[in-house]
Amino acid sequence: MNLEERIQSDLVAAMKAGDAAQRDTLRLAKTAIKNESVAQTRPLNDTEVEIVLARMVKQLNQAAEEYRVAGNADRAASELAEAELIKTYLPSPLSDSELGALVDAAISASGATSPQEMGQVMTALKPQVGTRADGATLAALVRSKLTA
Image (cartoon, rainbow, N blue to C red; front, side, top):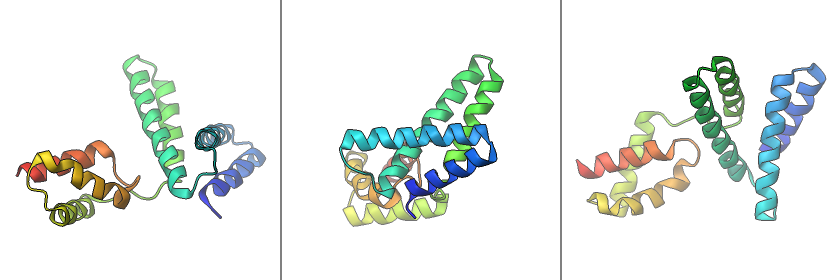
């Protein structure tokens, strides 16, 4: 069962159980996946679905922060709960040591020695890391290792 089918199955289960919060969140996820599929004019594979879901999590976390700043704690909590539900469909994040080892390996493989060569390292890392690490965190780690 691929990731999209798993989301559909869980959506049906949430509807049968009467879980409105889970139902609504999974419907949003299915809509985002469908929109991306239409934009690419083909069905998405699991990796592409993970990218869509990771984007959703990032957007939900940003919205929660904006609601928190605006003083709407209830809505912020709702957005965070939706993000947590979507995260259950993503692979577990890489630990700091795993990420550091991947960065070190990519730096040595590319032969990069300065921050100007950061693009080569990031290009090599992106397929290995996928959605298991935030791009900004990854870039900061690569930059710090190249400047050291």
